[in-house]
Length: 453
Image (cartoon, rainbow, N blue to C red; front, side, top):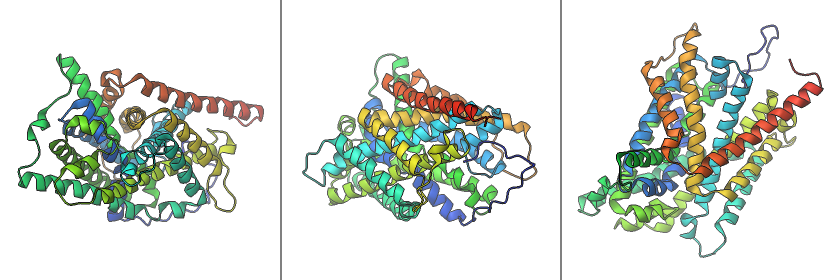
């Protein structure tokens, strides 16, 4: 990750990355990055907040995701370099501390997402396959440790199965949609639940209930922002990225809304809310002879893929920040034989272990969404600020109204209006406090060595 501008007086002899990712593979990568724990595990928790109209938060989340995706598309075309939100923040505001906070929030969002996946792995999907009554927290901890070991072994081992697992995830969701079609054709399901709202009382209570469900449901859409880090390895990024990101968000958004409709049609929202494997409940209620154990296995693959991608992203971001000297240099240490960022992997894994020990799927998913909504608000403002910085090549330019709406909606969903529990803000605050402490320590060490500019 690079968040500072290289000196013009120092020639750079580093070889460029190989542009090996074509348009079809990029679209699949974006879809794979978005799919996973959010829809497989959080659907029930969203239903618990909004009721049978569980599809509505996903529709609103889809709109918010598209608004911010448009800003990312403009910025990645304008500055076709890896680093994502941190790069855009530094270019727009040129305040290293703000850049660090944004980068650290992105890293922590990956950790809370991986921790939510670990909790989902240890829940009802696994229980369907085994009669062992091991404590879910212990299973989640073991899950994180196994991912850390795989990450330490090497990036090749970590990413070889990504495309396969993405296809497995899509297969699982296709099964749910097939069950929905079968139910409609046979007159099964309860259509009246689709307009049932859990929130009651004043219009304000209904609004905050829907906003709270939307903020949690937004967890299912995160991931597209990570794809911009592949820009230096993508063929013709100015042309291919707009199509890939918009198509990726549109395809996953459509699937999510349909899955939410089927879930509410087939299963009461209270039963969905009480399950850590809500889509398994849909399979069991669907009246289709599909083995629940096989679907549970598919779901476990889906949440494992999400966790692995996020642990990888967080450890590499930690490594990149250490190399840029915005975290202590020792955090960039690489395992000599395996060439993996050993200190970064250990650090993010320890944080993930702390998260799985203190939160459940709902709280961890909400923490992920909150952190990224804050980042998205900054990115939407940055795209407007950077309109003053023209570049000499053609690139996508989003209509001005979209980043304005993107910033406003992201801030609303990140605010107390979303009626999220206090522990989400506390958890995010503790993570940021850890980051700020590392920032201060690094500054003090650099100052003592006379390395500050």
